[in-house]
Image 1: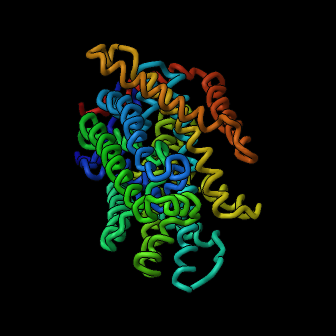
Image 2 (image 1 turned 90 degrees about the horizontal axis):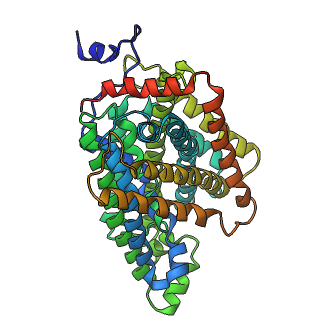
Image 3 (image 1 turned 120 degrees about the horizontal axis):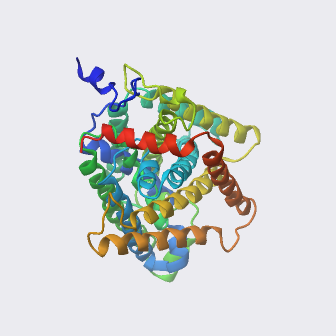
Length: 455
C-alpha cells in the first residue's frame, strides 16, 4: 500500500473512508503561510501614516507596543496549536476546549475573514499594478478589474497545484518582494499597529498537512510574530527618519498619501518607486494565495463533519487539494469583485471595505480563541500562571482593538460594516441550531480528526 492510499484509510471505526489531506509540509513551508498572509511587504507599502498622525516621530513606538500585544494574543494560539492539529484550526482549538458550538462559531468567524481577505489581497495587486503602470508610463488610470481578474486567475492556478507548491510560492513571493526593497538600500514602512499582524495564525490551518504539527505550527506562529515585530519596527523607523524628525518632516509624513513612493522618488528616483510597486504586488499575491489556502481548509473541515455540504470535503487524488472547497472560495471572491466593479466602486474603497469586514470578524475569532486557552481542561491542564495570564491578556487586547474599530462610530459606509459582520456571526449561530444533530456531528468529527494527529 503506498503512502497516499494509506493516508486515505479511515482512522476510526466508521465504515466509509474519510477524505484526507496529505501530511507533507516542513517547517519553512508551514511558516510561510503565516508570514505570507501577514504580507509584510504589502503592509509596509500601505504606510504608517496613522501612527505618524498620532505619535509623530515616535511612530515606531506604536509598532513596538503592537508587537507586544500581538505576542500576548498569539500565545493562546501557540498553546492550543501545541495540543490540537486540525485543518479547521480554531474550529478544533475552541471546539475541543469550550465545546462544538463555540468551536464552530470561531471557525465561522475565521471563514468570514478568509472569504474576503483574498479579494482584499487581489485588490492590493490591482492597486499597486495600476501604480506600476502609471510609474513606468505604460498606462495611466488603468481599470482595476482586468488586473484583479488576472491576479484571481493566477492565485487559483497556484493554489490548485498542491499545498507544497502553494506554500513555496507564498514564501517566494514574499522573499522576492522584500529583497527588491532591501537591495535598493531602503527598507520602508509598515501599516499602523496591531492589524499589520493579521494572519499570523494562518499556519493553524495546516494541522493535517504539516509533518509534525504540534511542534511546527506553534513555531511557525511565533516565527511570524517575531519576524513581523522586527520588520515593522525597523521599517517604520526608517520611514520616520526618511521624512525627517523635525516638525516639517513629521507633517510631511502624516499628510503623505503615498509615503513609500514619495520617499523612493526623493532619495533614489522613479525606478525604485516602480520596484516598490512590484514588490507590493508580489506580496499581495502571496497573501491572497495563503488566504485561499486557509479558507479552503476550513470549508473542507466543515464539509467532512457534515456541517456544510459534504462535497466540500473532496480531495484531489493528484494534488491533495480540497478542490471543491477551493473552487467555492474562488467563485465567492469573483462574485465580490464583479459586484463591486458593476457598482462602480473605486479600487481603494473595495480594498478598505472588505479589509474592514474581514478584520472585525478576525478580531472576534481572536477573542474566542484566547478565551478557549484560558481555562484548564482535560487537554490543557493548569501548568503555570503564565498559561492563564497571557491568554487572559490576549482576550482583553483583542477585545480592546475590536472595540476601538467600532467606537467611536465611524462615518458611513463604515458604520454599517459591523452590522454585516454581526449578521454573519448570527447566521453561524443559527446554523448550530438548524443543522440536525449539530453537536454530535461536530464532536464526532473533532474526535475522529484526532486520529489523523501524528502526535
